[in-house]
Amino acid sequence: MTEEQRSKKYDELYIKATKVLDEFNPCKIENGTCARGRKHGLNFCCYGCNNLSDNGCKVQSLYCKTWICETAAKAMKEEYRTFNRLMAEIDDEARKYGMYIFRAGKTECLALQSTAKNCS
Image 1 (cartoon, rainbow, N blue to C red):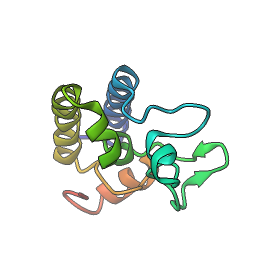
Image 2 (cartoon, helix red, strand yellow):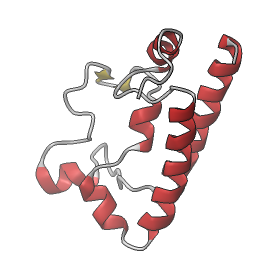
Image 3 (cartoon, helix red, strand yellow):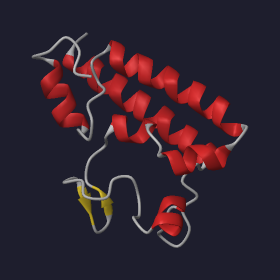
């Protein structure tokens, strides 16, 4: 797969994950606070991440886009099975192409991909 093809595949998977998140809204964000933040005080799973700015995430992280916390998962109830299946399909494809690195943005992931068969 060429660098351009990898970049397009990453974007495709990121967009798919965004659509699934938008459809199911597992984090239940209200007034800039997620369900976990309202329940436990720590807002967002990305709390403490170097890529987090005052305006949100500074990178497009496929890994982060497809992961949700336990608070969000439990709140979804019956919807979780469908949500999890859809995200698992994206995860599997991302792993297949070595695009699944914890808290890594697209640029970092694609750069590492050229030096490792699978970055997950």
